[in-house]
Length: 427
Image (cartoon, one colour):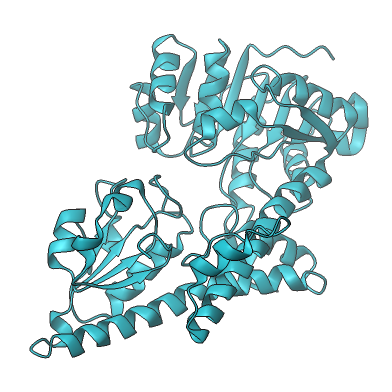
């Protein structure tokens, strides 16, 4: 099957789907982006973007202006379909961390009516092992007139593969092109067609494997990082108890030629590292003991941070005896899950700020320079403000994310304030 790709459809125009659509379109391939978010669709069709990612606005504007990128809420015919929708959690045998494939299922059933013989369907969403096979089964249910790899192998009408992304927010356009890509087809023919598609823009190597191995590879990469972050976070708690500066300790330990300890923080966030390890735990709960422990360490770190803020509030009251606790203002610096982006998904910083706002009797300010307004459900107790206002009004400052703007704050500006620094920026 010598597959050509004149039109590609990207299902899900979020932080991965939209940059992927833009990169394909920049190669003069027609891309139809599909999303249930009408605002996102309208914004993209105006040549603008609804997310923050460096240089993406220029690439999208050019692609839309030149006629290579168009967004819609309803799938249309194409030669290849890439599914890049969320895979959240749901309650199950392993608590509240079982993978929920409902969005993948909805995407499958939405594209099924427009599938044609020779089409390629790729699952890009980070998924538990077996999700690609489940996707193919859903498509087969909807289109019994077509054949699929699970029943017809190499001769199937529809090719199915899993090709997980492995990009860093803030560097997505560069890494989509330059990073190696793992291609996991349900058959070798599926892998070959998928690799041919990605080679239209990928400069890195397209490495062929099975669908299940590709699924597990992405989960393994992020679980490895999660375990290492958990070590740093646990070390920071131990050092606090023992009166040791953890930032200095890590700098010294990392002078060993075979030691590379990561930096601790308020927890672990984002749509990958905080999520993917649970997919492994869900699949093998009795075997994934270290992976589960790392998740529990990282998930518990926000509570430790909140306790440190309570101590700082108490210290502020002692130093200002004329004030009551209702007079103490806490400012949370950073809400995103990592520096210099606007993504609040799975963000420990956002969770910490919300919990402080819900329980602290005084004013709670949020400083997040990468967003214009807070989600509506947060606005009751949490007030978005500028760096300058927070420094002028706050009694206690909690540094949660080391955005570049925060690195410009001088030691003199912080001198009179009680500081809880989760990133070691102001040590």
